[in-house]
Length: 90
Image (tube, rainbow, N blue to C red; front, top):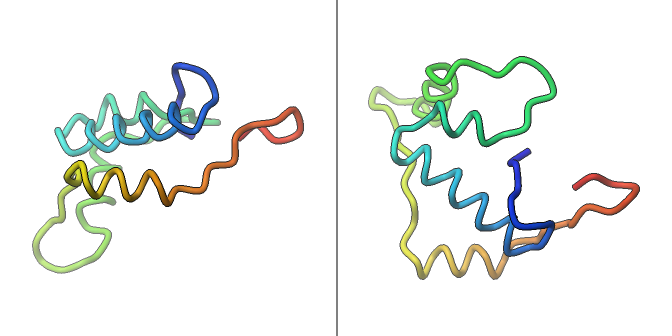
């Protein structure tokens, strides 16, 4: 779960998500891991990077990219976010 700053609003969740994607696109997997809440030991940044870069298989590694603003806006409009309640933490 991504740690959220700025309250529990849909916009705060989306901002946190895109900040997290940007960390990985910049190659800062240490910060990307620190931005997540872990209910146990945190994985090694190199392990997460390897998992992402080889997720689709093939001989060449994949990389994380931040989409252009138009696509980000479309993704944000289509996002279905369940805000936390007393019964469900989010």
